[in-house]
Amino acid sequence: MDCMCSKKRRPRGDGDMYLPRDRHGHNSVVPRLPSKKKLSSGITRCDPAPWHPERHFCESDSAPLRINDRVVWVSDHGPEYGTVRWLGHLHDTSEDLMVGVEFDNQVGTGTGKYRDRQLFEAQLGHASLIPLLGLLKADDYLGEQAPVDYGNSCFYTSHIDRRLKLPASSHFQEFYEDKQKHGGSSRGLPQPLNAQAEAKVSGERRQTSEKGNCTTNNYVSVLGETDADVVELCGVNRGIQGHHNSCYLDATLFAMFSCTNLFDDILNRARDPDSDIPQYEKIQEVLRDDIVNTLRRDRYVPSKNVMKLRQLLDDLGCVSGLTTEEKDPEEFLNSLFHALSVKPFLKLSSQQETHLYQLFVAKNEKLEIPTVQQLFHQSIYECKLKFQRAPKALIIQMPRCGKQFKLYDHIVPSLKLDITDALEDAYRFCYVCGRQATLECWECFRPEVGLECTSYCDSCSKTVHQHKDRTDHKQEPLLIKDSLRMDAPLRREVMDLFAVVCIETSHYVCFVKCPVKNKHTWCFFDSMADREGGEDGHNIPKVDNYIDADTWFGPKGLDKLSEMIRDDKSKILPGMTRRLLSDAYMCMYENKFVKQYE
Image (cartoon, rainbow, N blue to C red; front, side, top):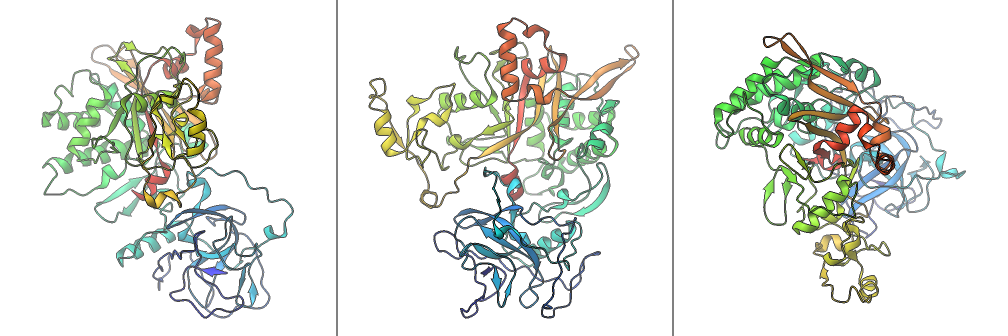
């Protein structure tokens, strides 16, 4: 069996552990984590003595991994999937928490035996021991995996050492920070257990010391992490109060910061005196402390706080009229990103870099009710562009001209956005047989299918292009890096929808997804839902639980909307649903896997 924490290999012998090898026979060692002399509060470890012959086992409720959890180990040649069979400490080699994994592929050399003890049972050549921080939960990794049928196999009866007492995730954060301080590499050590992943009450304040180029700030957790949080979030005087045509800014900020920490790096990066503007720290402080943290802590931001940010951005002169005039979200975002020197999220094959992606498409009669996925693929096809790499955030602007003209009456937001075929160097799949694609034919594109139908392997391409309608098609070889040809991870790159900004008659609102675990919970926000008083009065913001999310998002919504249009009943769509399907202006997607590493 294999161990990834040993500094050098011992002579081969029955039951000895070795560094796991990937399917191609290459060692891929996760760097050794420095041991901590002083442990965090609540952490206990047994004395470094040999194991007692009699062991007792139990599962800890606080353990981040449990027996039979599916995990991913990212090797030099791509991800390797496996199942947790054992958790505990190896006192003669390391104080780190070790995980016994049975891999799907042969990346180990043993059957679960360490020295003279059988820690767990696994198929021959599939067992390895790996430090906890060297693994990702399969659910946190975007590679799609079919559920595993454990059946009645004896391989799935392993245990967990009762001496394991795991604290909150701050312990693992300390290990990671200590490793970074000592100059260790982070390859193979994913970062899902960061400060923002710790279980806590929504809105609770605490101090975090951000490493690298980040400043030390009060971090306030995102909203809507539990059902109780969602109930507390919804209601009158919740969200950001609108004032003087600020709805474009209110809806955008609420979408970006209320229920996700995707953009939190913007709030904490320290000023670079060589490149950042003099007003950088003031703008960042107002955004972080007066708006984002106030929203997450109090669930309400008064309009005066937002006006501070509007005034600061207006003083820069990049976009005029930010304090009084109607603007669009992209104007605000461009001004904010410029002021805070935010690096572009997208790098295009045309060598351009951008924060936003505008869908430029011609109306296609075959797409009566298009999805965002279909329009995204059509835009990539018509512009002949690709992404150089998978972005952590993708902000897509819907195809419309100004506030009134809409290319389509209805657009269904896609909960999952597959960007595999839009990546320049990604592993592509043959549309016919599913094997690795080697050729691309743009002329085979069909808007109702998407970019999937443009990629083929050599043999399928020859067959497909024997058809009389395709004999003149020009095929081009896919430009896949050599390192990806044989060893690329067999997965599709998929991004998750977390917010939709909508507009109706110059008024912006938004839908946001709440991070309630294993639930599909969405909220609707309007910064000017009501008003108290006349001209001298004030607007009242409101957040509502969008209880019809399961009905209208994704394929279900498309089928139901198609039926209503056939029966000429689309005009009687419920108010929130009508705004979602008819008035979508901007859809925001996140790549959870890339987000962990950027």
